[in-house]
Amino acid sequence: MTEKNRFNYYIILIFLISISFRLINIENFGLWQDELHTFFNADPSVTFLETFERLKGLNGTYHREDNTILYFYILKYFLLLTDYNPLFAKLFNVIIGSTIPFLIYLICKIHVSEKIATICALFVGINIFLIHQSQELRPSIFVVFVSLISILFFLKNYKKLYSIKKSGIYILLNTLMLSAHPFTSFILVGKSLYILSIEKISKKFIFFNLFCLLSLLFFFILNYDYILERIEISPADKANSYAQLELKFFINFFFRTFFGTITFGALNLLIILYLIFNLKFKIYKNKFLRFVSLQIFSIYFCLLFFTLFITPVIAPRYILFVLPLILIWIICSINLKLKKNIPYYVLFSITVINTFTVLENPYIPRPNTNLALNFITNNNKVLNVYSNNGILKDNYIKHHRQFKNGKLKYIDINKIDKVDKVWIICQNQPRSIVRKFNPDLDNCSLNNPNFKYNELKRFNPDYILKLYEKN
Image 1 (tube, one colour):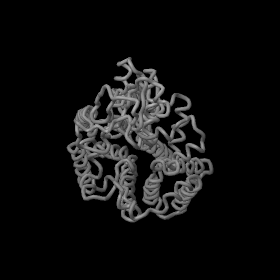
Image 2 (cartoon, rainbow, N blue to C red):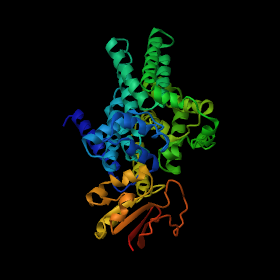
Image 3 (cartoon, rainbow, N blue to C red):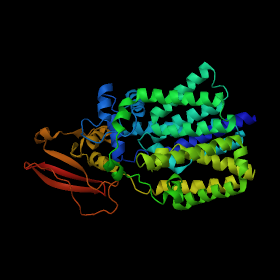
Image 4 (tube, helix red, strand yellow):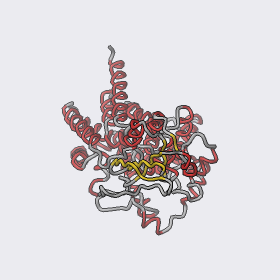
């Protein structure tokens, strides 16, 4: 086997490892509130215009979508080709997340050996936060995907961007990246700083920034509705934002979240500080590490700038695309400093232990939707189901795979008198809202005098099932 074929097998193996991690418990996970928005907005049975109205909140029916529309339309057509259920929706993100290590490999091998590129891909593939974000039905992992494609094209072609073909493709990719999320503009700042460090202020630097401005212009044209809705941010919105700047940000820089635990996050932060102290100007002299360093700096700096002068956005998912760059920086800096395999073996072992530990013991366990629906199916006495948990939750339950496979029948409230027995499924104490649960809390009832309550089943803390039958 040639060395090239050997590394090809390694990349295939890393892809299989990545997708395996991302499929763990994928069907057993319920959806958080923001994921319910995603699933509802990506319904392939509605028209293009209705999808757009859903993203705007259906005239105040629920909160408007905070992200740009690109991801939702791509997900919509994926579900049109497959099936509209939460599992297939999450599989879309799993597939995207599993290809990210391959993009990392392609990015790294431009400047480093295939061995180091493969190691970088492996660590990205088993990172716990990237795994979790691949399992979550939100645009974050898609934003990482398109950002890395833009970075890959830039690193391979930044010396050739001055041809019409290359510059056109580059502008297109940047526009796509910005349309995935406007915070990817932070990456453009990093690219500009890198070109400045190489070319100084020259014609090439001016042309490059012109391409960036054209990309921003096309983004504004394609997403003007999104921009106009968010151009005015009230003081109340700023004050009520959950992503406020706090002192702890300057202590851990999201590393606790990025690496799953306080201990492992602190270890990686200490490794970075040690390498910066020891390598010093060697980092700048190494062109690839210089590029990655400038990207990381630009992303964090722009996040702080946006928070201080526009609105608070201090949340790790907003800059998830910085995490693969941090992992690349750590691996390549270790290689520059030590050039030995032992540090990788040690760090890999700790990473695997940390990943399995966090996967098996999540900070906030997800809702037990599967257990509740499977209980009704296995009960096999009554298959009628009624839910009154709002348009988003009810849509999710009606299209759930267990609901379809169990041949459950959704009963509308205006037709409930036509059945003799019905299960009421209630969202009782959502895990995303509360942290301490009341085991006796019961917010589940059917306000119909023709029915009496017969049986109760709890799936703490998320759901209560109640069986009602006619008097």
